[in-house]
Every structure is written in C-alpha cells, then in structure tokens.
Length: 195
Image 1: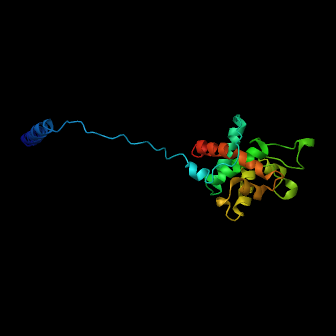
Image 2 (image 1 turned 60 degrees about the vertical axis):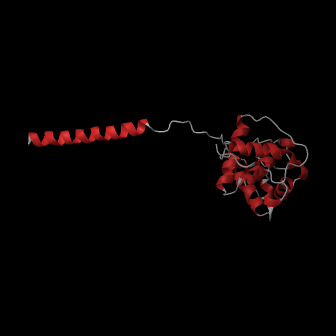
Image 3 (image 1 turned 135 degrees about the horizontal axis):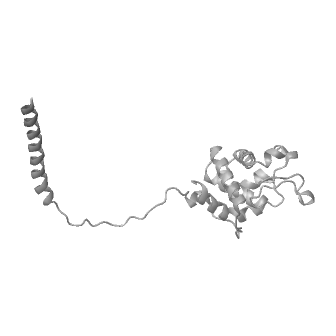
C-alpha cells in the first residue's frame, strides 16, 4: 500500500511539474506592451437628473437659506415620505419648495397672534380645513403624505410649473411665492434622495 501511495504522489508531482513547465515559458512570452486607454467621464448614477428635478427651469429670482439640523431632518422626512408614497423626485421638489415657503422647513406649532388662522406644521396645514388633527399635521411624515395626496389629485401636476402645482394644493394668498424655492428644493433632493 505504501508503494501505491508513493506512485500516486510522484504522478501528482509530475503533473504539477509539467504544468509549471508549460505555463511558465508561455506566460514569459506574453505581450506586456501597455494598453492605451481613453479616460471615461464618471457619471454619478446615484444623483437624480437635474432635468427631472426642474423640468421647466426655475421661475424668477431664487431664495436660499442655510439649514440647521432640524431643517435637514425635516428635509429627509419629506423625501422619505415622498418615496413611501411611491412618488418621484419631482414630487419631492414640489413638496420641499412648498415647505420652504410655508415654514422654512421648521415644524411650526401654533404661533398665537402670528398664526395664519390655525395653520401649523411644515406645510402650514389647517385642522379646520380638514388636513388632520394638530398632532397629525405636525408630524412630518403625515403632513407630507397629506400634501402629496392633494398633489396626486391635481391633473397634470408633473407638467405644471412648480408654483402652479403647489398653489393648486395649498390655495395660498401668495401663489407665486413657491417658485423662489425651486432651486434650493432641487438641490436638497439631489443631495438627500439616496442618503
């Protein structure tokens, strides 16, 4: 039995040697000339297309504010609620521009004499107008979902300028004011959509 084992081991060693002889010289003569390559532009696929975020271009002069941690958290909540509702990046832009105009992305409670009737939350929705309870409309996910539900009911909102789509849902006394936030809203969606 010992001689059978030794013969098997010698056969394996012979195959390994033969493989090395044939592989070695062949590999030694391989072409090592560097291959010329052309640089390819890197496309970051994880950021939404600007053309999709602002399909009509911005209208009028644009406003911009620096956001604190609370406002960034509210931005992310609006984007998350938009995704959860099965809506796209453009819906998130419309939602964020609306919330920027209505509350500067601050989840506002009742402001006393400075309150516009009983408007509260990110979108300044009114319990008396059927948007929900105070607790509901001051919840970022709920208030965004309520806004998006209204947006879905607007025929052709995707093809409208942002301010018209937002105004159709919000019925504001200042309908043109939403447009000034479109660029910042688009920038926020581009930054946080996939984060």
